[in-house]
Each structure stands twice: as C-alpha cells, then as structure tokens.
Length: 271
Image (cartoon, rainbow, N blue to C red; front, side, top):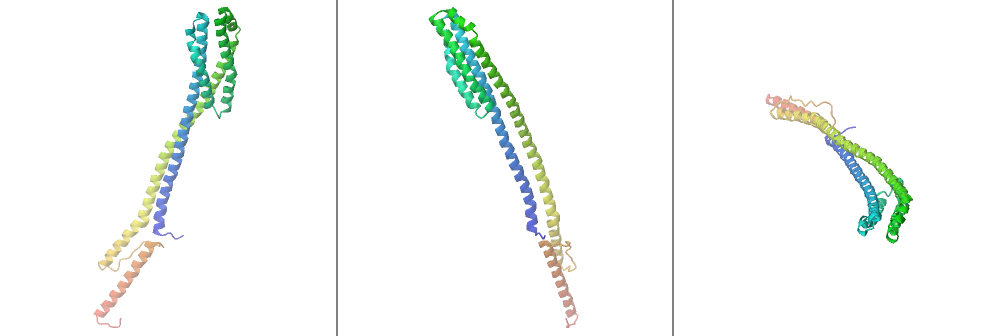
C-alpha cells in the first residue's frame, strides 16, 4: 500500500489521539462506577442509621411505658408519646431505603406485625395502669408477651444490620477497586500515549523531516551551481520520493544544458 506523507502524519497522530480517547473513556467509566459505588456505600450507611433510630425509638417507647407504670405520672409518658410517631416514620423510611433488595424488604415486612404487637402491649399496660392499678399492668408485663416481641424485633434488626455490614464491605471493596483502576488507567494510559507520541514524532522526524532537510540542502547546492548534488532518499513512492526524483531530473537537465553551453562557448555549434 502506498501511503502519502499526509496519511503517515495523520496515522501517527491518529493513533496517539485514539489512545487518549480510549484512556478518557475508560477513566470516565471508572469514575462513574466509583461514584455509583460511593452512593451505594452512603445508601448502606443510611440503612444502618435508620435501623439504629428505629431500635432507639422502640426503646424510648419502653422507657416511657416503664416510667409511667412505676410512677403513674403522665409526664413520664413523654418519651413513649414522641416515639409512637417516630417509629412509623423510621419504618416507612427503612422500607423506602431497602426497596429493590428482596431480603431486606422481607425483613422490613416482618417488622410490621412485631412492632404492632409490641406497641399494643405497651398501650395495654398503660391503660391498665391508668384505669386499674400497677398490679394489673404488671401482670401483662410478666406474661413476657412484650418481651418476646421486643426480642424478635431486636433479632430482625440485628440480622438486617449484619447483612447491611456485609453489603457495605462488598461496596467499599468495589469502590476501592474502581479507585485503583481509575488511577492505573490514567497513569498507564498517559504513559502509553506519551510513548506513542514519542514514537510518532521519531518516525515523522526520520521519515519526513530528515529527507526534507536533505532535499533542502541539495536545492541549496544546485542554486550555488553544484549540479553534481544528488538527492538520495532511498526508494520511496510518496511525495518526498517524487520530489527527490524531480530534483534528480532537474539536476540532469541542468547538467545537459550546462554541457551544451560549454560546447557552444567552445565554438561547437552542432549541439
């Protein structure tokens, strides 16, 4: 295949450009994946925080109930009253956060009946303490109905937290891997691009700039009257080779004309 000078130059810089485009695309892809992994890590932290808040609200409800059962003073119900609305909010938020994860969704669904049972037990003891006496409320507490519901809730919340920790480790490792890949892609890709650019420059210099410099010197020598100058650029079929042939033909023509002029000057008019 015969390639002209423009094609060779374009090919050299095209390869370098292609390398940097590939590096840019891969680096961008890794950055996007890294951002997605970081978002996933943040999301997992949100799930764990919501689990902690839900458990804390359940414990606050128990604290308010116990305080009221012991004292019979309504002000001790403040933590219980505040926790009722918070529990619903935390459970709803938790359901939204785990949407799309079947295992965690199943756990959240299992929380609903247990939360309802625990709150019903708390409300029952409070009502008994208010309408009857401490002994009636204590009997419900000693039935362990509320304790069993709370233990089951803690078990589910702990299991969800363990699964969230496992998922967090996977996502953290993935984010770290994407960071390493991005770093090495940029470093190695840039190094490869620099090497390719250097090779392209070397090839262009040796294959184009050097022969052009040789032809320029030949043209200068011919201008000064040295018709023996010869443009030796090897066997080339591109523009430089054609230019070298043109110089050779011009030099031969000038030598022929110079020889004819010398013969005429010597009186030989047969030329």
